Image (cartoon, rainbow over all chains, first blue to last red; front, side, top):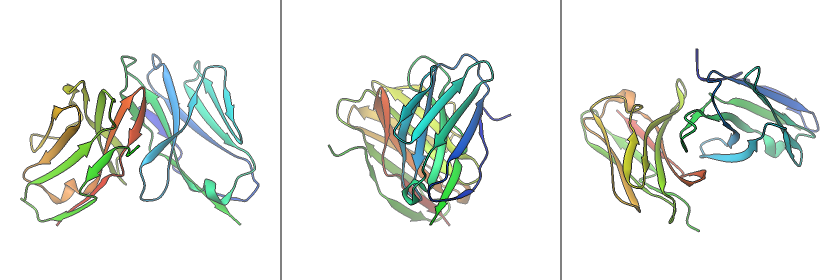
Length: 111
Length: 110
């Protein structure tokens, strides 16, 4: 079993749609969670951290369910520019900075 | 800010050759990471330095791979001898809290 699992997609949605991505992680002791965005042939960039109480940043909402070891990302009113691969990321060692990346979910927003 | 700088951006070499990838982290960051990304395996952590000291190299695939960080502003990842299965994008990232990635080196071993 992979340490961080995601549906690879692709998710093909029309502009303006709401889309949700899910992710599960294997280490119940993990403390820090993130969503990164990676555009084609570019480096990953931090999209947002995920907090226990859930958090929102504009059209993006992240949720964490520790009991189910499940993380989600919701994108509302999707834009063409949201097309990218979204990486679920977990800090499993809790001692600092070691991140474990999921395989990514590819999103394609169509006009 | 310059961000994390990696060189070269692209490298094409023949099997058996030595390859050296270079990274300059963001000034003031105390941690540096080398990752490899392929379609099959995704993004994998190879090695992690904290204050120039290697902390975890369990992701280094085999003895052909080595990494050094002689000072706070420079790191290298060396593959010797290179093999076609080493073809991938190699990212360097640095952090003081949040991780920032460099643009990557796209390596092709023929």
